[in-house]
Image 1 (tube, rainbow, N blue to C red):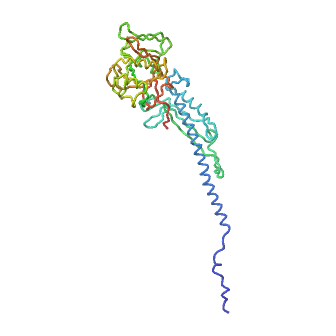
Image 2: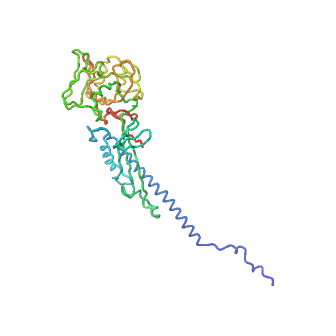
Image 3: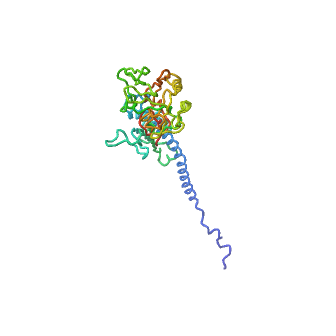
Amino acid sequence: MMPSIFSKRPRWSMVPRKQKGAVAVITAFTLVSLIGVGAFAIDFAHAYVVRNELQNNADASALAGASCLFSRADCANTGLPEPTWDSAKNKATAYLQHNKAESRTLSKAEVQAGYWNLSTSVFTPAPVAPGWAQTANDVPAVQVNVPLDSASNGGGASTFLSRIFGHNDIPLDARAVAVISPPQGVSPSTLTPFVLSKCLFDRYWDSAKNEPLVADRKTDIVVGPGNKQDVTITTKAGETYRFPAVSEYVFKGTSCDSGQWTTFDLDSNSANDVRKLINDGNPTPLSIGGDTYIASGNMASMYQEIQNCSAAGTKACQYSVVPVVDDSSQIRTDQKIVAFACVEVLSASWAGQVKYIEMQLSSDTSKCNVSGTPGGPNLGAVVPPRLAL
């Protein structure tokens, strides 16, 4: 008998039966993958936010510490040799608690004070090793490293989906370096238009402590032409030396010239130009090694301008930053700037033959912050703390 054509198995029946269990396996693997991607997306995004908070804390603490590397009344470090490393570290450590990361108040960080090299970006902790020599590129700095891990500040950044894989947190850390330094260069609109001679700082500045000298007894400082028109400024014992400056005459009994007006890079002897510069400051950036023009002329009206803005007036120019040159007596010449200094302008006088500005040197860096580039000698003025890393 011939087989019936209906006895043959249909072709579609030759296809293997569907494996229902494979769907569950594929679904499981897919779910794990999705959870892993979700964990990466959610947990690492959260860690990124926490890392930014941690970095902000490190930055703020380093900046706060750097502000206390030089003398400031609110840092309780006046009268101490500078830089004041311990004051800076204490300030940075205390400032940690002013900010939070992941709603946690931070209490633990590695805080160091020392020198940061502006050229090589190398940090050298203080006290420095014997034989180490500071260069022009080495400026005082505070370095702060804030960890967030199992041993510090309550563990790493919290996770959510990653807990399924046994990862309860993500360790993080943030590092910041803040520097502060006397200026090597200054920005426009920074300076008051008179110069002082380096000789004055050699006499009235304590280079060991980087602060003005204090008189150990009553002291008279005299400036004038050598006749009855001499001007005498008296400093009491225990006070910072006061002296008459920016006069065409020298200090009696010394070879120090008393300072003179400058028009910076204008090469002008015009009183009107000086008056404008009193209000507006230097029109262009200036730096150590660059020139400033020593103006000539009596400029009697300029002393009244200074009196108006001095400590005896509106106080607008009470604390001034000025260029320092080797010899300010060489009028109508360009002189090389050797430093920038902070002075307190007490008053001015234009009556009589000898016209002068009465002033003191100052080391209060909170009063003489200037915009510019760091790296100059310390005569009281500083470029405010800034982040180097």
